[in-house]
Image (cartoon, rainbow, N blue to C red; front, top):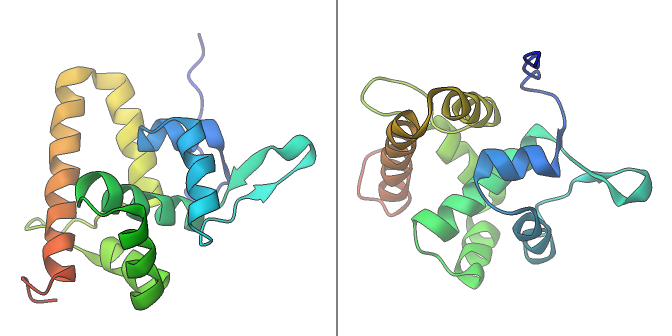
Length: 148
């Protein structure tokens, strides 16, 4: 089977690509669209969704708030409303770990998902552990426990 060429970081993604990268079912993404007005995928004929890179970043932040940081949907909605989605996405994108690498972005999500698919479960755990550490730093920054 021929290897698919990786998409540009600025390319639009289908719901299945985003769901696979975020490791959530497609129906969860559709549910989040109803709960978070900040997620606005482009819809084509037949209702097919195409997510912009900005949508992917927002979804990553929402996933992190709900699944990693323990926020409820109402709590995440309040945080996004009060601090602004751009501010929070920027905080997540600008967060650096000790090596100076940038935190999760649409390109990083794609690269991570390709790595995981190619290297198997051991690599998946390493990648997820690294991402989790970065996200914990972001949470501490949001709570004011770390300097910006």
